[in-house]
Length: 363
Picture (cartoon, rainbow, N blue to C red):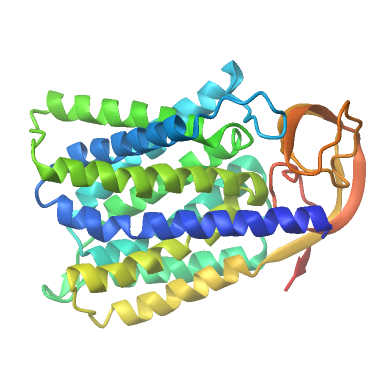
């Protein structure tokens, strides 16, 4: 792996750890709020909080520089179909399904089921966007599926309770679709993407709640929901989008699996939930699944076709071109990649989504 790519991957890993931590603590806190706020209303408030928090951040930072080294790439007309799909699946349907699911199962169980977002993201990336799938990914799928089966067992009633888990799993599929759609615009301004997504998803969800006759409480719970959304959905989403550019959809989803364990620990501390016996094998299987995914690497000869586009980049083997001025840090401008064929260990990031014939898995 080249030095420039190594630095980029390290930054992306830091981004996804921060994103996962912020999102992980949201589930037990949302479990507390959903007792007083209707699920559809809560989903809308969380995303409106994301929009409000990011708008305040933009105002404070006053991001309006024309310096190529700092200016972010704005969305273009061709990007909005991807964004619209992400808003619908990950901003509206997914969160509503998640909040309803929380009313049926414990915060601890729901937190562990969040791991399935990584698998959903990876499977969609493999089948629809041609990212590669090694044997570790398939073993991880089996491991996490078995864990999900354990988590449907309700020991208090001595039977499987599938309503809550199915709603959470459906939410994970929706977010898996969202992750893959957002990946296609991950080289654009992440704050702009997150603000549009937060505003659109929040307003539509609240309008839906009003149409269904649900009440929006006018007390401190609304303020808490907005504050939670600003950090766990807004700032977390910005870091997630930044990670997508460097890691690709399937690997970003895999590393985001750190979030459920943060949520599980927070559930034990905040909700004081009792650990039932099914949690132990489920947790072990989830950990095995996450380990299988995050330790997978691959290397093969691949070709980068000639391409002209605009995105943030440093100069590396993939970005050798002339400037009217010199840059030593990440910068943005339209540039052309000449065709290049080489071999190195890589993830399916923005520059590495391609067909795979011969794959060498690096353990």
